[in-house]
Length: 157
Length: 80
Image (cartoon, rainbow over all chains, first blue to last red; front, side, top):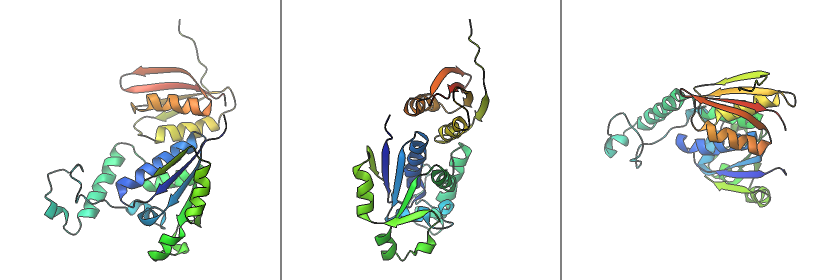
């Protein structure tokens, strides 16, 4: 069987949206896929040094988010709610034996997943190359397209 | 008559959720020699389908799967 390839664009920086790219990337690598993740816009939050396990989530505008009690939108907008919702979701994941974002990132690197940071969004958002974890390459749209053209699976998350 | 499977290595993946059972299985199988058998025990109901898909993709063989009281036991032969 020829080796399959997959690319993922990770464009979101909220805790819940950090999971799908890393779960799929690590699993695909375990299924012998050649995997590339391209981090752009808020997806850069996942690969900033020391940030992977500090991601947050906002219950605001998300009526489906499970909360211990109904939270009115105005309360959800209060300071500290994102951190609270973030740590609540983290403990839910932990309780169910789900790896943390930091662990998944380490597992991705360990299994040879190629990580690329979008240089343009880094420049726009003032992120320096030294702010990004080791083992990440830097590139742009052409870098992603080159890999995507040869891949069976290309996802934008 | 039950067929005896000689187990070379055992992996306890109980209490772990997607994707950890698969990631740990991959690592454990990689550490085996060809034709050796890994026994994996999971509690994640999704692992039943996941393990079959993983084995199909990687070319390894699930010799047997036992299901009972909330756990799943896979006997995986490293054939790839």
